Image (cartoon, rainbow, N blue to C red; front, side, top):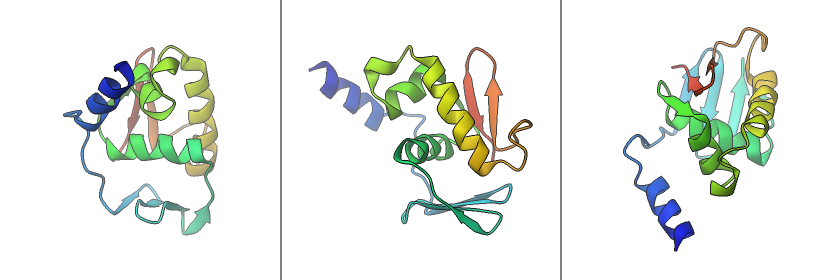
Length: 119
């Protein structure tokens, strides 16, 4: 029952917006229908987890995504407290999509809270 309720909450979340078919931001083009991304015109391959993470963040662009919410949406409710795994995957994603991963412009960190995908 708890799993069904968790899925229902995620699907009916008021902050979740319908993602556009394509999003262009800071040299990054995301095609949601084809599950493809282009970084400065060059196609970049993402792993399943990287895609799910990017999809969640880009689908909520401009909004703060709290650590536990991202973890529950991408990995499931049993991972809500595993912030280190999230930091690792966000770092890997930044390596692929940011111009300078040490100074991110697309995915901003809000210390001790979460991440914001900048529009």
